[in-house]
Amino acid sequence: MLGKLLIFGLAIVAVFIASTSAVAQDSWAQKLVEPQKLDFGVIAAGSESVRVLTIENTTKAVVHIVGATPGCQCVMPGEPSQRVLQPGEKATLEVRMNTRSYKHERHTFLTITFDAPQPDIVRIPVYAYIRTDVVFTPGKIDFGSVEIGTGGEVTCKIAYAGRPDWKILNVKYTNKDLNATLDEIGRNPGLGTVDYELKMTLAPDARPGRIREMITIVTDDAASPNVPLMVEGVVTSDIRLANESVSVGTLKSGEVAKNQFVILGSKPFVVEGVECRKFPDSLKATLNEVESKQQVVKFEFTAPDSPGKFAEEVRVRIKGREETYKFTVSGQIR
Image 1 (cartoon, rainbow, N blue to C red):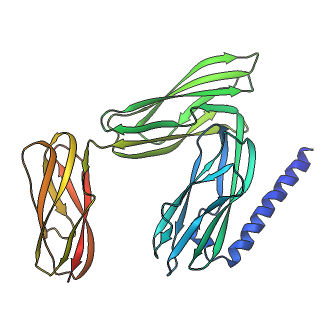
Image 2: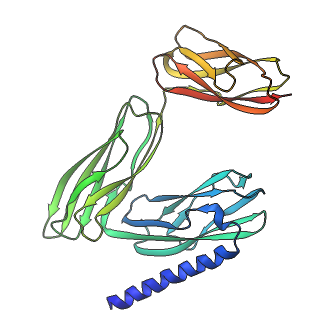
């Protein structure tokens, strides 16, 4: 019986591969999408599981993405990060596996539809095995939005039903700002159930930015020892730029434009320096040496002898901080 099931499973995989190959032969859009298949692997029931597709416009025409349609409701695609792609631009598409409503082996497709420069579809094979013997509550470690310097802690319950001697051996992760503590809080050999509590802490000195990591719960299960668990969060800075970009308009070479940008903080601070690396002699800022929660920095931009449009990064240094804060100064030089 097991042999027949194995042959049947291999036949299904062969059909998927053959179908994908047939589409790829005539598809201009197929080569724009990476990866060419989504393998969620073995995941726990109730867990948050996400994969990301990248769509890069390597053509010379404008590409328009209509959307993504799942072949099964077990797959939940999000919206593309952008639908219109100029040549060289990229879009991302997050795809989630519905581990709450579906169980065991899932084989399906995700169809991505394009209507420009001409109609086309890309079919991405999707695979997952949702195991029901391991359940995470909640389905992911979510720190939410955390201000820098405060850190965070989230607890996740891990419930297992099966072998009475089942154990978690380790928790693996790569982010040095994370720390895991695992405790066994219950075991019933008669029922074959085991309960663990996982405490994940985020260091107070974690750098600002988004956290997204798939940590690995390592068990003594010989067949499938590794169970992934999503960790997410955002570390927000206590200092932020109110303007992410500033335009100086259209200038002649040597012409001077005056403008300003605003920096906000939860505590008083001082701006130590402002620099534009490509045009170091063109941007001169007037700095306030008095600490304040709001710094309005006025600057003069002298147009260099470089005709054409420009959008250059400007770095702002804060006294006592290692990290720099960035915005873009843009315009056109005639």
